[in-house]
Length: 112
Image 1 (cartoon, rainbow, N blue to C red):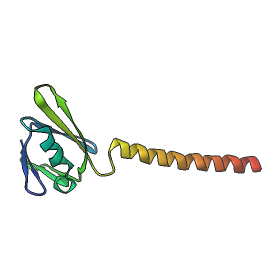
Image 2 (spheres, one colour):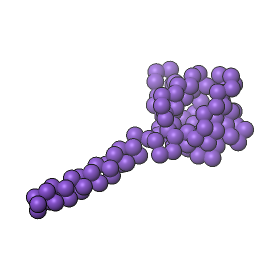
Image 3 (cartoon, rainbow, N blue to C red):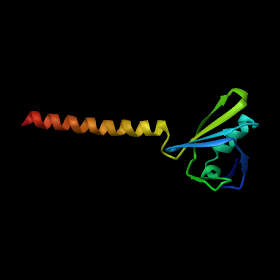
Image 4 (spheres, rainbow, N blue to C red):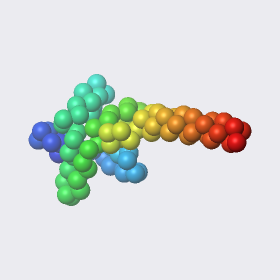
């Protein structure tokens, strides 16, 4: 399978797996540093098209590469704002707001 990037660059890949806001791309016969450079480029990865016409828009947040036996690299990308770290930060912010609101409610109730 071949991927085409927004800037016209192409890459031969073994598989593409989509899970919600995460895309995993398996690649062999590549240099890890080259893959990091390719997938770290947010402009280039803004639009990825497979040779069978599937379009992956907005997967610009490079998370890392894992290496399996036989030098199979799996690149993990998220949509902007959808990585696990970004989602956890958002949940923590919401929890702080909820905690403050609950504290205000308790103080108001006790004052009555």
